[in-house]
Length: 219
Image (tube, rainbow, N blue to C red; front, side):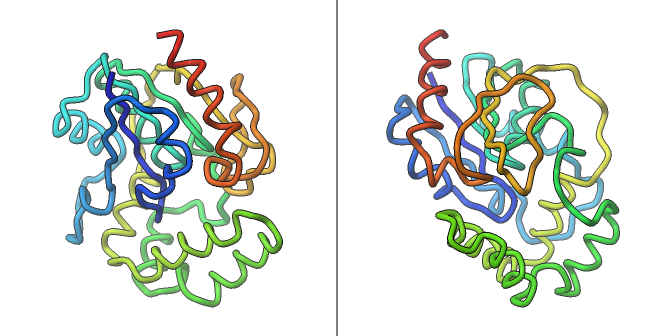
């Protein structure tokens, strides 16, 4: 059984470092930065991107895909293309559950290209809200990745969130979410509640690992 991990916006494979060893099996970590590349991409959306990933990595119904945040959104569409099994952590099947003051993709892309979203001042403001929480450093590192990363690649990641896609009708095999998640609202559908916030898989790995192992054992 192959377990495929997909990280979220601005993250990398290290976001799974506290849960992957306990999950075991054959594992594959996808780096969205590398897959997207640094060139401007027209017509990019999560539907097309997930189809490309499914073909590139030969994802099938025998695989499990575990996605965090944006990675769970990508996994949702991979399931549509392949009928694989997916586990969403701090994610959703409705992009409107994302908590953001910017609802226009075009505005978000322009602000990103001009350094007006991901900059040190806004990093300070956002990280300040997490003061005293175990996840404060994780958010800071993610923001740094978005500040220092290639702007076209960051915009491409945003396109996976903002660009319109066809509605699909698949159901995640497991949803894991913390009620205190300040970046993605809890799903309206049933989910397994864990303590912590958006980064529970780092700060409370045991609680995240348990329902995953239970679900895998049922397979």
